[in-house]
Image (spheres, rainbow, N blue to C red):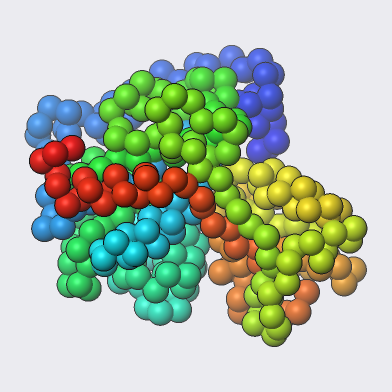
Length: 328
């Protein structure tokens, strides 16, 4: 069963195969076993010397966590904070916690942490042990830590929890993995501080967010950026190794671009061979994919950065909660 088959079952209304339904209790048992010590108080979350904001989701695949983290970094800086980011570093080979350099290798650090570090310059630490990785940030003069994709990891005590949901696909068929896309029940949303709705129509109590991407930038730095509109009417190869490639392809089509789709698994380690289309057409990809192609990109390869737009009142509320935790 490939990813397209899974997407049709999770989001397209196709019936769930029996074997998937039978594996749901297994998933629940494994998850309960993993959480048991925390729920019983045998293990306690580590409280750091600075506040922690967790950004995550309750569904598998991309919902827009990384663009939100980038937006939070900018907003916190504007309000006088010095943020740092801790991440699992999924897809990277690092086994011990590391503090990323200015030009991190995504093969070691993972694509999302590498993107965050390169784009913002803030201190970023990765590690399978989130607590040890986060402690590396304390020596980097940060005064607030953003935990990227940490909603299901209870090891870090958190001051604010933010769950990002896909406003178009929502929760699909509403089933737990592997029969559906949910990592945990939608009841988890009642426990978080903020629910951010990426695209679609935000429901009552949700913070609306939309992703904006209007320019393409040469990955090899060989020239200036150009508006996506310049590719309108052209055939291009579109590459996306993200949780929801369709969102990227649709965004290009909305600009009048004729898209040849190349969807890869989330965090796929792209190689030159993956992009050897032998026809000379432009190749457009997400910024997350572009960090893995910097070593072999040429003038045909373009990245399409996106930025998250949210109400300023949301960032003001985050700032107020950090400064007056007792009032929240």
